[in-house]
Amino acid sequence: MKKVTVAAIAKEAGVSPGTVSNALNNRKGSISKEKRDHIIEVAEKLGYFKTGKRTGILTLVIYSKKERVVGDTPFFSELIRGLENEATKQDYRLNIIYIDSDQIGEIQQLDDVSKSDGLILLGTEMQLEDVERFENFRIPYIIIDNAYTNQKCDFLSINNRDGMYEITNYLVKKGYKRIGLINSINQINNFKERKMGYLQAMMDNGLNVVPELEAFVQPTIDDSYRDFKDYLVELIKGEDEMPDAFAAVNDYIALGAIRAMQELNVNVPITGFDDISFASYSTPSLTTVRVNKRYLGEVAVKRLIEKFSENENTLKIMVSTEIIERDSTK
Image (cartoon, rainbow, N blue to C red):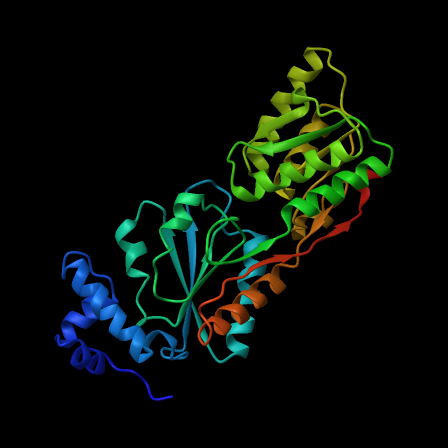
């Protein structure tokens, strides 16, 4: 297919190439909304947005709301490795951009087909209002590590709810009935889904959920250690019955909790979620939910490239998980 140029769009729309460039790059204030809509309509008719490979670049947008969940961690390193490997295999180069949720201008500039063929948005910290910022983008994109039910865009996510359901059910089958939840103060969508899985498993097994056995901690190892230690001290001081087991919403929180329990001589089985590399080296080694991070990245690239030729339909893809049993629950 012959490449559609800015000059061709300008001729068809009866405007200058500069005006077309302003419209395609969504430069606010440069032209009226009506004129931009007309130019975009012409560009779509000519097939500008469906020409597939133009720049040879895919852009990973690491989107942050400062929830302290996304960072330079083994989980995201593995995910990025999967993205890079598949991009290279498909003869694309992966460009990485870091953007905070308050950088409105920078977010709008991402809708620029002259700089990238498509976007992979790391949506770990995205709330619904963040997802909605991208709903009118012309450039193909997929949101990974998050999913919202009613949004008409492509999502690729871990099956958080089922993964947490399965590991809670695993604890029940080991004979534990009074199971506490170690949750994050920073409530990203993944953690909300994991809590739903925990609650469903407890309900399906006819077990009571005790509100006092849900601890809220910061989502880093050091901070979760301090917060969970404070929680345990209060639990012991109040002479409340200790749970039979704890399920944590991620591995960092679980590893911090293990350290706190060891210092207070508390011995309660515990599980994590994600299977980061540290999980197998902790003492005790951590029983957790394994997520294939590289596979997540590979699928994201493949789906985005599919959208270059077929951009009408949207998919919500859930990647399954598996339980990895180690010493923390033995």
